[in-house]
Image (cartoon, rainbow, N blue to C red):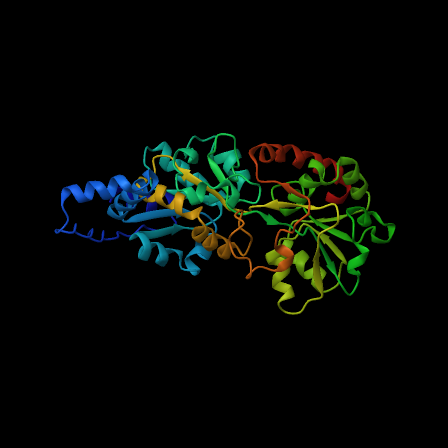
Length: 384
């Protein structure tokens, strides 16, 4: 009851309801102790460990998941699935990480532990959550062979974000970073990033603000990190780029033809206007692009309120079945290669032979604050 009050008072978001633990199935009375021992010893160690964990999680009967994707996970029925499959009642604590984190950290400082799983961006996880000492290493928890199989992931290895293995990037979504109005720009006019430097586009390109966290700096940093370089970005800045922070407004600008080209819009903002027939298209130039996980980083909170249920979830969510739920919730491609993509726009699916920069690493995340400053210097005239 104390934990319930803590969530209501400190998080101020939701209350975690009590879930009655379903009774465990009674053992088959006709089986002898010897036959049970034989059956147990013939199982792989991981299978016995999984069955024991599932039984312990069922006794706990509850799981608390924090993160901005909570609403989407509820909408696709993740809570119902986990209840049917494992007997877990799921409480989603939704909101932006910037809203949830201060309140969550306050509970830790008070010595109270109310959460289990946090799904958030690698940048926030590495720059704020991990340094606070409230996350656990996942490599000590994941043991299911299906989840550990390196061949199941697009890079041939588990998509660890950090060297200490406190976070996994569940998604690897290719970003089409340039959006054009096809009434004003022909798709074959932008084959290369250098095509944006054509004098005809001077003063006609809009960019999401690259001086802070967001899609604008995602593009700027990826260009600087190797897709292009800082010299290219300096040339791009001389195109008198229009900078704006309101990406929803910018999507409307290009949909209505106020500007022909925008850099840094998220796919969901573009899709909203495409659905109503706006003449806009996302472009990936020949030099390649980057993959991101959005806010799809998986973290296990330290001293989890439901330790067995949280460990069960971490293993399950990295399987094909678990990843399909995550992929559908985000509308983006999983880091696993065996998860269906038929519900994703073909342009948002990784293509063979395309160069993809991985932006979901701790090394990359820790560089971003430095790139905020570099971008502010380069685009100083546009930011006035």
